[in-house]
Amino acid sequence: MALRIVQYNNPVLRTKGEKVNAFDASLAVFANDMIESMHEAGGIGLAAQQVGRALQLCVVDLRESDAEFTWELDGAKPPMDLFMPLVMANPKITIVAGTPETVYEEGCLSFPKIRGDVTRPDAIVATFKDERGVPHVLKCDGLFSRCIQHEVDHLNGVLFIDRMDKKTRGGIEDAVKALAKETKAATKK
Ligand SMILES: [Zn+2]
Image (tube, rainbow, N blue to C red):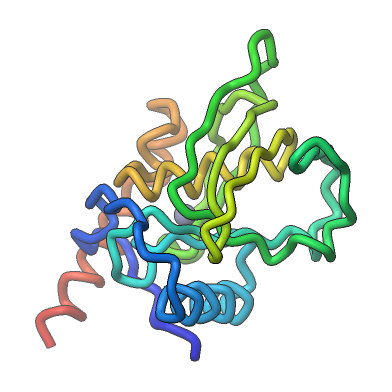
């Protein structure tokens, strides 16, 4: 069942997620609902906060993307179809030493139609557990890495607009304010 995606500035988007402790059937159902919601919205990543729950859980699916990137999952390079959509619980990111920073125009399902350049380090190593509680180590770069960094930010209540430089942020300020106003009006109903 697809869930409703919450928009800026719903307070849940600013709430740090609680650690996932129970890897049970209800978690699997919730993760599946998140995947369905992400696919329905045409996104490549979705965090639990974006469907109204402050939990350290996000989903990623880059199979439709034509961007170039590399990955290594648990020391191997499995084809994407074998591990995507990817469910990541309690993810932790380490930036690979010496990796360059890259700039890319990001969007976010909680900010419809708003986009802006965000600078992030390229290569990361992410540790996480899947929906069954099995731990994994994922090394990746490019859009894969960027997507995970964006989602892990969500899990900590950080949004992509916080990562934009002043000029970029200023350029979308009116749209961001209008969205916040729209969200507030909708929650009052
Ligand atoms: Zn987002």
